[in-house]
Image (cartoon, rainbow, N blue to C red):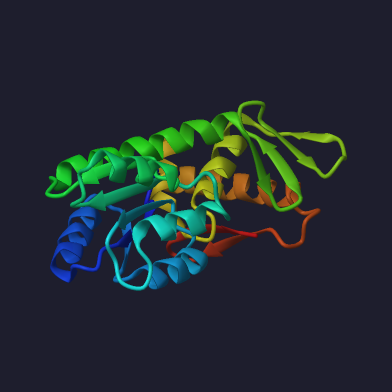
Length: 226
């Protein structure tokens, strides 16, 4: 997932900074939290794409954090980091809602591989599921939008892909160059103008729900907000 946001919870500051800086070299946006309560707070405000949680943390441990978040979000991938290696600890991690479990010490390369695997799996699942965007239901595979119980709106192949990527980066700026190179295979002037036209078409097709906006962040890209 392009420019995915990772919420990293690690109370050991030196290790947390090493992980954060390493992930940022791979173009991830990383929000580093030092305890469980800070993690819950940032989850609610930052809308991350994946959680990387240390198990032993002040205020709330990683298992408790995962359980609380799972009550609100069943889909977000969660990776646990821990020095605990007994089978019962691993079982508790998965029972708390974890998708993966990485024992310390670990290599940064392995962590990155596991993050990318879970993000790719989440993207694949999203492509096969109905996605709720405000009052609309978006079917990526069928390339359709439906407003409440009204007639289905057909999307072109490029409109569907553009909306999918905007929604995957909801409330975050999707850089123009990233989406142009992904969907148009270049980021020249003519492709940029073409993308602007498709953005205008999507705005019209989403116009029945006034809470949905595709904001032009001048000089950077577009942001889908709802």
